[in-house]
Image (cartoon, rainbow, N blue to C red; front, side, top):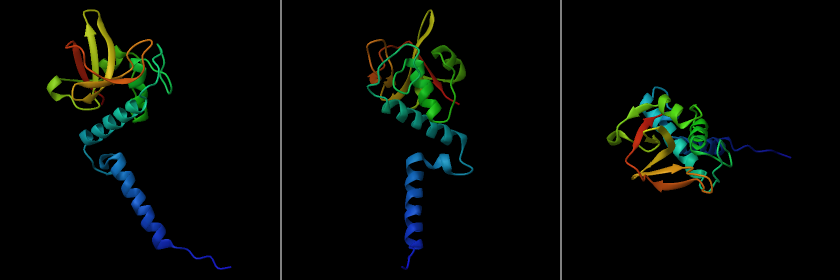
Length: 157
């Protein structure tokens, strides 16, 4: 029995897979010498994708995934999967981020809701004035319009 190998074909397919991986993950992740801003954008985009993939997961106070979440548990889980560590609470996450203006916000930035008593909620900015978040008991992870002007924005470093 003769075994024939198709090395050129195999290498061509491996090259295609590598190109697809590069396109899917983003060149900044895999390209040596990429700027930190490009890498941060890729991390934020991945975290946003992770949060969106959890659509419909039930809210549970204190839950950090992978099947149930509270607000800061969803952001912690999403960024952890994207390669960045965040503290547990929304207030600690705000302290951990680089604070940015509403004009500077980008998809994947964190949105912190606050009152006179402090920060009470966090979500991931999805663009067009919307966030992915785990809102409250009885609700599920969902995409929703930002409902308040009392928000601050933070970019994960």
